[in-house]
Length: 151
Image 1 (tube, rainbow, N blue to C red):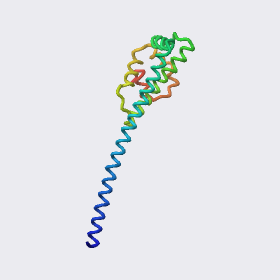
Image 2 (cartoon, rainbow, N blue to C red):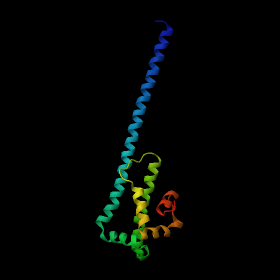
Image 3 (cartoon, rainbow, N blue to C red):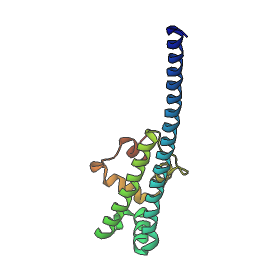
Image 4 (cartoon, helix red, strand yellow):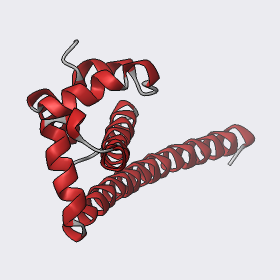
């Protein structure tokens, strides 16, 4: 075997190694993406479960939320603080989901943002709440427009 034949075989082997490495890398990236999606979905589910657990365990908080959804102005100062904190948790979760969706990482089994938008647009207290925080809104303009039906 002469030198040219040896170079040809070595080049062929090196190219085959590069192709095998790229295939392996593609497989690993796909596995990593699947893992990120699963972790994001789990994180979102845990956040929703924690908010629901607050409601299950505290009838007074549940009553405050129900009252505030219908008539935000009727809440006492303490009830308003609870209501606002809970709503900001819901909005923060929606922002997180939108961020994950924008990065192509979210893989939810429910349409949380659409649910939240429908909830905010159908309940007068939630609409009044959004008006009350208009000047201090720190979230995305996109979500604010959807929640307030100003799309």
